[in-house]
Image 1: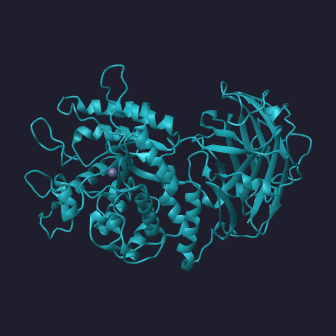
Image 2: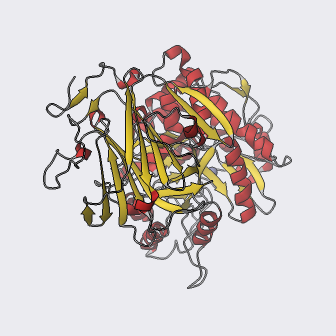
Length: 618
Ligand SMILES: [Zn+2]
């Protein structure tokens, strides 16, 4: 089981599959509460869901959940209410599908999309991504196809993470002659193609529950909901397209644009027909599904059948809720709503708790989260942790890699300086909240089994970093070099970074992002540092940093502590509140992994525009 280069094995660790990695003990401090959980990476089938539920509690404490389907009006009041609830339930990032159009009201004035995005980015940076919407106003003009392409190019330029189409096509939008616009109108083809080229995923809603096409009377199972929303009834075939035709026309669009990703919302727009969803996802690799507002529907099916479907398409099902804060009265909508008294914040927390309950437990026959959608019960599907995390955030991270907010880590202040010894169980480390390196730097692919936690501390004189690295085998240079830096820029495979290392890139000069220091430490505690001023690299530079490492073979983990003199990084020492630039990396040759805290999405780690933020806090 040697995958190394020559004589470089520090230690041949037992041949354990990654799956067999030991349990990692993690302490997470969130909102002042210490949450301790065993993150089981190896799980027997019987305890799948119990372990998953524990793991998910940690993800929520760390606010790692991504809700791919929200609609939030962008006044300060609406945003504040949304963020308060997201904080309470553990949603870190929400995708606001109601970004608006990029059409300017007048030349020189910002579009609705620009205003919305700016408002959220200013008030709650890093908490929302925005999808743009299409302006159909000029549909009848002969060059509308070209105008639509221009609109998405403008959206891309303005930072739209994706494109949302509401259920307007085939149901509400009409041309100048009064005919319904078709979902697969060829006029939209150049736009769908361009969205793929720009790596902007599409979230698209067509059709609705079948009952919305059935006769409207007391026997209709959506009687109450349709009574409160008269314009959701589409049973008049003279006015609306038939239900199945809408779904099939969308599938034709998906087939015509294999390079564009279509997230078909509301469980592929057909939560009532699992076989149809299975067949469609099977046919189109560029089709995905979100869960928004359809757990009440999906939860009616045989839970084992649903679970099998989730396991089969675990890389293409994404968490989303249709949580909304809208209208002048800041109304909350929890999947759907009617004329009943509006929900309170506490109701929203119950709504999210029921989402978790359905995905994480095996409870049967319980009252679902959106009563107006129908008077029946649902049964949970209890997903295993590795699948659950894909649905909750890994799939969304990959889908949105280009647009994800740059990460922020808080370095916690300490007055007690210490000499590194590689021991991360020291109580001082417990004050710092860890960040994780678990994505490949080049493409954002997630390797949860290597999830590396890093904590940061700072004092008047030093910055400390503590890395905890799950591993199966170590690939290093032996014997380690002391007193000289191991590198050769003109040769492959002979520099310290060509084997296992942890790295930190740190820049204190906000004006010159190409100027930053680099630190590397191998499991043998061999280290090097250099100062960059891109494209120059100064290996003569000496920061005076110190480090220590420790490998625990039984636990399958190696640790590293670094202590870096702050005066080497900046002529003026940081104060609480200061924000520097940082990226963190880890190379693990046994898994062909080069993990980044903030993936650069290019072949090199030296992409300072992708660095995250190091914030110094008390
Ligand atoms: Zn929606």
